[in-house]
Image (tube, each protein chain N blue to C red):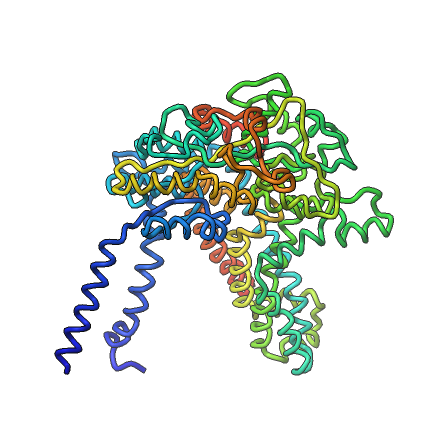
Length: 340
Length: 276
C-alpha cells in the first residue's frame, strides 16, 4: 500500500512538472499604474488566449531600465512598456531589438505618430497623452503658456518639477510662448526661476494637485491628460486650457528585450494589447488613451482622454534624442536657477 | 548568568549574523559606492563633487538647521509637557501618556496630510489669522520651511516627551524641593539640578528626534516639496530620477555621520552640564 501511494505521488509530481515545463511564460515589465484594470482587461484575456503564463514586474522607469541593464547578458524580462525617451536610451544601450511589425496584425490600425515614435524601428506606441493646463476658469483666463507667469496668477500656480515627466514638456511650451525655443530650455527655466518664490509648489506627483485645487491653494497647473479625471470630480469649476501655442504631451511605447527567448510570444502579447478590443476596454476605463485609430469612444469618455486623429497630429512632442541628450543639462540648469 | 563568555557569544551569534547579513552588508556595499569611482582605487572625489554644488550645500545646511531647530524646540516643549505629566495623579498620568503615544499609532502620511488642510490658504490657521484681522490676505504657509518644521515637530515630539517622562520619573523626588530650600530660582533648579539628572533622557530623546528629522521623507516631501529640498528628498531624487547611486551613497553616508555626530554632541553637552 505504501509503495502504491509512493508511486502515485511520484507520478503526480512528475506529471505536474511536465505540465509546467510545457507552459510558456512571458515576463513583462510595466508601470505600477492601474494594474488591476490591466490584469482584468489585458493580462487575463491574453493568458486565456495563448495558454501561457504572464509574469508581471512593476516599477518606475529608472528601476526597470537599471534591471534590464543588469541582466543584459541573460535577460529576465521579455517585453517592456516605457516612455519614448527611455526606449531610445534602451536602444542606445543595446538592450532592445527591432520590432518585426509584420507580425503585428494591428500595426496599421495605429495613428502614424505611434507606429515608430523614435524612427529607429525599436518601439511601437500604445498610448499617448496631451499635456496642457488645468485651471480655474472663474479665477483666470489662459490664452498662452506665459499667462501662468502673470503677476496676478503666478502666486496660484503649481509647476511640474523638471524631474517629472510633465516638467520638460511644460518648459518646452513656455519656451515656445516666450519665442525662445532652444533645446537647453534655458529661457523657460530662467523665467520660472524668476518666479520661484511666487509659484506655490514644484510638484512631483500630479495626484497631490487635486487636493490643492480643491483647497484653492492653486488655480492652475500644467498636467498630463491622464490626470484630468480627478479634477472633473471637484466641486469647483476646472477647465482644460487650449493655449495658442498648442499642447505638448508624451507617449508610452512597447519594446522587446534583446536576447529574449520569447520574442514571438512577446509580439503576440503586444499585438493583443494594440487590438481594437483591448485598447477600447482600457480607454473606457480611462486607463489609457488609445493609439489604435479604430477605437470609437462616447463623448463623456473621450473628453477625459487624449483622443482622435486631430489631437494626435496636433501634439508637439519633444524628440526623444533631445530629451535624452539634454536631460542632465536641464536638471543642472533647473537646480541652479530654481532649486536654490 | 552564563557559565562562560563563549556561551554568551554563541547565543548572540545568530542575531549578530542576521544583522550583519541583512543590514550591515547592504549598507557597507551602498556606502562603498561613494568612495571608489576611479579605477585606481579609493577616492573622496564624489564627496568633493557633491559639496562643490551650491544646491547640495543649501540642502545640507537646511537639513542640519531644521534638525537642530526641531530637536531644540521639542526639548523645550518636551520638558514642560513631561514635568506636567510626571506631577499628575497616577490615573491622569496614564491617560496623558496614552495621549502622547496616540499620534505614534497613526501613519505619518495621514498626520502629514492633515497639515495640508490646517496650513492651507483656506485652512484653520489662515481663518483664525484673518478672523482676528491680523492679515487681510491668506498667509502662504504650505511648501515652506515653516511647514516642514511644524510637520517634523509634530511627528517627533512624542518621542522626546516619552524619553523625558522616563528620565524625570527616575530623578530623586526631593531634588527639586531641596534646591528650592537652598535658594535656587526655577531657572537654576532646571539648569543645575534637573538637566544634569535627566541628561540620559535628553540624549536619547534628542538623538531620536534629530535622526528622525534628518531621515524623515514623507513630511518634507509633502509639506515642503521641491521648494524645500532636504537631504532625504534629494537622496530619493538622485536614485529614482537620475539613477545616480554615487550621489545617493554620498548623501546616505552624510546622514549616517550626522546622526552619530548628533549623538556624540548631545552626550558631550550632557556630560559637560553634569560636571558644571
